[in-house]
Image 1 (cartoon, rainbow, N blue to C red):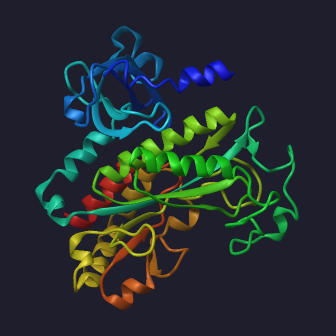
Image 2: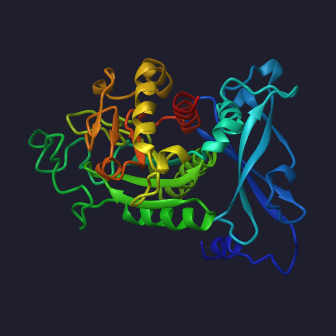
Length: 363
């Protein structure tokens, strides 16, 4: 193992200018992340300078065997926290050989919206909270839970507002997997992801990280690469990460119940918005946007995927955590700021969610 570690940490900087680019893409399920590495002759910082690359789409559920060639288009570059030095992670989307986006390529539509001059003028900021659950390998049971049992004092004692000592908890009997969480935090900062915070959630083994504020499509690129980095770290640790809203049965609040999408001005850790919402008079722009969201509520729910039953009927309110859309009290007081879309589940596709919010509220 010592030799293996030495080989993994070889310093090649004085031996070659070549680097390794790890191409990352989203597989056929819409949540499975795939990647493969290739050698490049020298460091690259512009994704448009990277070569396109093919893969076998029939092996990822994205193409038939008789026509399996799929092409990766490099779209965003991040520093590689695993190989370090000048090596890079590359977020890609996927196209047919004739240049058409494959059906599972949700980034293409998002890029079209965010490159529209009307949207670009509004400089949409996003902050996204990503919740997830760490599971014991092989048994798929949350980290810190007794096998096939529940952590004390038992789920029946907890309500939506009080689920015991685990939320932001400390101690060996309350926080499970903190080394993974902190490793992920550091790795995201190294990669250049705008990760702005982490915390323990109400379920043992459940954690949350926040990305943003980031402009336009970059917020979604960063969430996907942050998910990839977390998958790689849990792979090393021998733990499974689940982004599923309900990875375990019982009366506990779902692990990763939501991926709240904050859309407005930077305030506290991860708040974001359009330019008009951040300026004087922005509160009226926000309330107008909320009404637009009300009219397209069913379309958003259908596109977001699985979400809580409380969001089947649209509502909004100031500091109302149970509402579809929550507006902060600071935003109401200042007359400008942000709103928070609380409908997306933790396994949402951020390309779809951020695109739809921009589409509905700006156009």
